[in-house]
Length: 410
Image (tube, rainbow, N blue to C red; front, side, top):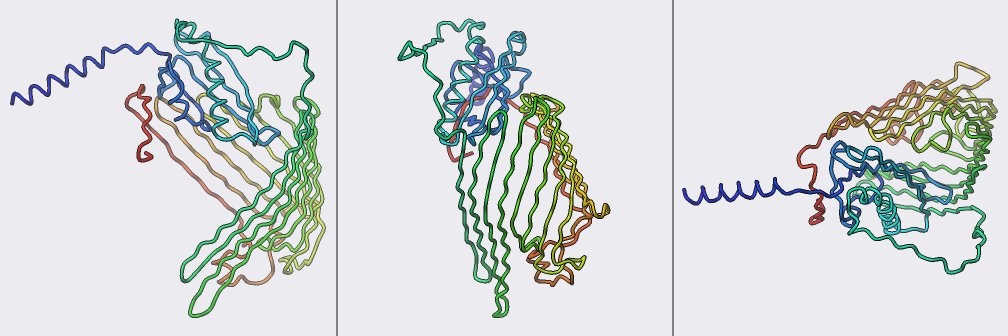
């Protein structure tokens, strides 16, 4: 009995000691889905990370976009809370494809520290802060370094896998070569590629083989007119067994209007675009409209947008495609996704798509065999397609525990 009383008293003393501890460090709410959060928590000192933005002194809100080099342009919004509500800052920095994951997280940590300096100063942490500025090697005004690649970025990609068991095996290979050049006034990209998916099933001594492959080449060019308007042209050529296309060619000029400025696209955008052009197709098997090949005109309109704020993000798109020789051949699709922080620790997530398809002119005539149906060797007629995903996440407990322990990887 005395042992139990001793344990209870010890627990009470420990609890009271813990509850009376004053943690006066700068409280940070880290809001970044692409960061190495574990690394940041392990290497950013003189702060306390919290799980609820309402308890934070500073909310670090990250947004990112792909840049012309294939890396990312990051923007960190330092949003002051509570006693720091009048302190708001913004820092941007870029990465490129030559940087390793460690390079990126070190650079991210560097700019987080730079942005927190004024908050530490307001909190009185002057004894623990030092700033060093590297002096230039020369006092002469140096010319801006010229880019020997003139903004061009090239990418080679090759992937393959093989798996199987006694009665079946599958293999997949993909190859692609891409070139891209992005400036403030122009965005150009070109890509060629090949994909093949092969599946073999053994049944009663017989092999059933399914092969799907596709070849493609795409060229896109977009010109910036002003902060809201852009024009472009999109061309593609290739073949696809699944789509019953022995050869196809498309060319569509386009125009786009952004209701917000393109410079704000990391936070919000709402675009309306229109494309109109020619489509030429040669079929592997005669189509349902008894055509071996045909040249058609097609147009499409697209309305899409996204909002990325500290309370969450919402993104959606509605598109309509239609052949001009027969306006009954069309498709309409809707896409919506959201992740919203409703209250402390509770996030609601929704993601879904619904399409009405009335333009599958490429489908082969004739019946589909059971093998083709089960192996999905060719595209099947369908008046609609959909998927929906709903969910929520809720966490509760200590908002101050920032200890990192990677043992056993959980």
